[in-house]
Length: 556
Image (cartoon, rainbow, N blue to C red; front, side, top):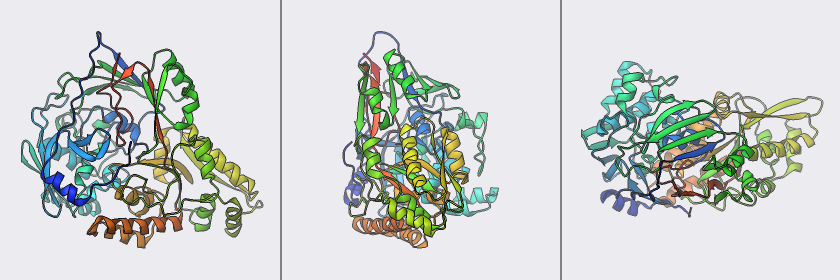
């Protein structure tokens, strides 16, 4: 995802087994300090999400909204993602080889339409995610469909009604009773509970969708939940005025204590100076900001900034290999060597963040500091481009795009443009600033030569990074047309590894293969920055959150 403190490690299998077999605790109930009168929280963002359907969208702009309306079966205890706790689940257990998982569900929970949350709703949500089969969506991209029994066969099928029934006959998700659901996986996966904290698995109301616009298998062009929402969370969706605002109201029938905020309004304000002015005038309560905007906010008496330097995020530039010039490995290497990494970190990140050692971020098992960071080497880069046939007698234009309002990425594009064009080899970098939804659409269609994106962990495991970046039929690799058969085979071996040391070795080999092939300019493990009005209390952070969790927040 493009997004979503402390050094986070994967739980070793022995500890996992103890946790799994003993179940889990519930998240701490937050009881905010009461206020004397109703109030509205106002969040500002730089762009609209592509849609509101958590089962289709694969970006933090969507999840920052849906995580406040929908709920997953599992979440985390405070800031520690090594300690999963039940949210809509109260406990779980797995069989000896981690292929069958049983989850026990919270009773007396209702959706916003008044219908009951139960095991059937869980099955509906998971069957929906798999059967819609969106190739660029989270269920395929994060590998959830593939992990469920029969998921690969369904994705490879002709998607007929018989194929639908064949998938359902696998009972990958089985209702045991109203409060018990069982998952059967296609292979052993001891981290399955982490998957169930991923926002794409948030449980939706079957009744709301089926009553208004039933989804159909292998059809993701339109769904009811693209423009509507109905979950079990602390806030209910009211309206969405595109490129302007979204409105939410408190769920007074929430299974925990109701939130203190009566309403939440999310306003789309792309200009950072306009957001600062809104803070100064008391018209904005919080916003997630690019660290590039730190100077705008740091001297304001109305704003408190929270900077988190140890995110599980990788910032990168993708290079499309489906056509010339990036189907030439020399060109990809030249562009990798044309990015001034340390200058970017200092000038754009103000010294925050870290230069990546591979695509697995620091904080996860699989991170390896011995993997070299990419180096700025313009002299060698120019020579590589000459060898690839570039010259000023044969001018060429290469597009590079970033999302509207992201001044950090804009600066990075300008830095790269300056270096490349100074080679005087006839290359012009055409910088395009696109709306978020437009950027994602063009990137997925292969319409951009280069594009800036970030990847925040869907779940805190190394495979959630090496899969999307390195495996030919998985998310980013598929979109940039990257394929390395050795890496594809290693990725399969990763899931057969008998212990974490073996997984780490395979992870290292995959990342070294990526380093040799250069499908991306991996330039930063960035810090994240959050701006809050000084009268806001109850703010909580977790590395797996996408933006703000409104439930515990209130005004003095």
